Amino acid sequence: MKKNRISKNWINKQRRDIYVRQSKIEGYRSRAVYKLKEINDKFKILRNGQSIVDLGGAPGSWSQYLSSTLKNTKLLAIDLLQIQEIKNVKIMKGDFTEDIYKKKIKSFFNTKIDLVISDMAVNTTGNKNVDAIVTGELAMESIEFAKEMLKTNGQFVTKIFMGSSFNEIVSKSKKYFKETSVFKPPSSRKDSKETFLISRFLRS
Ligand SMILES: C[S@@+](CC[C@H](N)C(=O)[O-])C[C@H]1O[C@@H](n2cnc3c(N)ncnc32)[C@H](O)[C@@H]1O
Image (tube, rainbow, N blue to C red; front, top):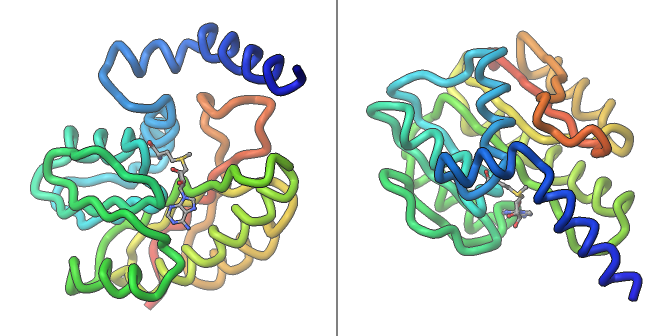
């Protein structure tokens, strides 16, 4: 009973949500695309010619946006879930935290890259607090990966949750990058603890 009520609430919320409607009109697979657009409007992280890895990319709206707006880019998206094909994007299905996939990503680019973006989140336990903690661990793992993958002055964006490992990841970012910002895009749901860390200009 309770589960039905929750899913009905979720469906009603989705119907009322202007970003969900807009993403359908524009042909994006998820409303998440507007978060990336808003981050880019503010921080200008995207440029033609960049090599970019999209961690936790399913269903694929961020990569759809990158592929359709940027020229001469090298793009890879990885997720635990299958991502349907996107033009000019190398799709990988797997757990980004496993060494084998980190190696595969490195060998696909075969050189340092410009940008690592991560919208990774877990939604497995049914307990929002526990999910937020695990998602925080994913963010910590992705900042270490970004440090290895990025060129000097490369950039990193990740979803993080207020609480859990927030302070730890912000101080890591300050250590590794010249500029660190925390930004909640207007399209991020007000009742969500989600926010984004924007780390710019990797120190050499
Ligand atoms: C909010 S969704 C991403 C939405 C995406 N940015 C888009 O625009 O369509 C979060 C994704 O993170 C993925 N994820 C969680 N843990 C992961 C891991 N260890 N490796 C790869 N993907 C992971 C989930 O499977 C889920 O699809």
